[in-house]
Length: 627
Ligand code: ADP
Ligand code: ZN
Image (cartoon, rainbow, N blue to C red):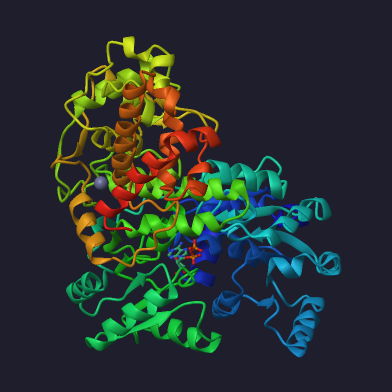
């Protein structure tokens, strides 16, 4: 941060010397040196580095080498003390200001600041939103502002925090102080938001590779509530520190109890516990006094434990971003570690249930999109690493050798021919349609939409009758997961072919997908088993157990429609359009009132056909054991 203060630009040897002297490191990690240099030249910075990439050093080193004060904004109040302690350990005068300080402590800190005795000041965004506080900062010779967890400013991130929005004022109020934004979870959308909302001026942008080759990724169907599987897993990793994430506090408590009852040193950790207890448990884990923490998402933000050897997710996480961040807590020391995700059909229902409670329609839509992406990850037979990195707009060719798919644990077969049929349908219809319509075409299903657009006349119409709809939908999902099909811009946009997709269509690439065994998808069989063992699944109006069940109901509804239409000599769509049948399949109305809520159902049609469709829904629920 010397730029503005007129400090000589230090050459690389000077940086290395301080790196060694102050921090004890022999070399920079990737990108650290360029970031430090940019910051010291007074430039704004946007840096996306994976968890454990060494972000703190990027602002601590300039703070040490320059003069004046570096301000670090961080949302993690509980960690500030640790960060400050850590910096002091390295001999850097550091302090923090947040709501946990007593009035006396805060006064001491102010005094030290006034005396110029502090180089690093950590503050919470709440604190920064106080105008007087910002005004006083300028008195202390502010030379650098570092915004940690910068993705929190974006609604597209998975951890949006309204209080981060006030950080937008910093650029106006400190026009000459460089701002460096750091995050471990930046997608392109988040990056744009951060740069725009913080008002960064032609920032130096760093996007490190997010690949964590030391982590092996695996997805397995969950048996029951997963506790026994987790127990087996922990025993296989005897004595190795690891974290189990569960979707609920209750689940975390239950799993921790089971592990403890079998002689494993395991504790629960979630937001419902006393602060004191949480702190104690975190410390036990960090200090290797406890092997296993069973936690909700509240755990692990920024904990710096280098030797976490495995991470298990007992329930489907809500987003790829969150998942990747949580798995990233393993293997900070660069040694091998394993990330295991257990997935059962109940996850879809319970996550949908949470999503339905979100009131803001846009936020709900984002949550839906995250869930879809997460499901694709869990269900497809495409290199997990390729999928994870694609989320961060990073290409990975696959065959990573360090995931269950690449290691051959998921049975696969050559699906090149089928894939080309689907891609061809996409191309011949102008790359504007989604999976359902493309599948209707290849399976030769004359839906209203297909007929209206004359897509039944395409050469690809009906070329894939040998497989069921569900099979093709799985294939479409896998092609998206593999990056062959991509969604065009905009919400309603359909699939377009990527460069990779075009090569595949031209026969220059092959495509391997999950091996079919009746129905495709690596998790189908165990999913069904899990469902039988979990009769207490939350089944609400919209929570479908899985796509296949919904598809099955849709097909029965079509039969009902066909019978009515045939009896009356009417075209099927006059009875109900596909859109209506899809809505019925999704919401499963069992009363007239509920059926009326489906689009396309008016009083007259309710009167005429309502009973028949409600009966079909009821029969379906009975067959599925859900009524
Ligand atoms: P992040 O905030 O990016 O998750 P940290 O700043 O906490 O990462 O750094 C992660 C770990 O890497 C810390 O233990 C830190 O001391 C260590 N570290 C940072 N830079 C280096 C380096 N150049 N050489 C060795 N270790 C480093
Ligand atoms: Zn792989």
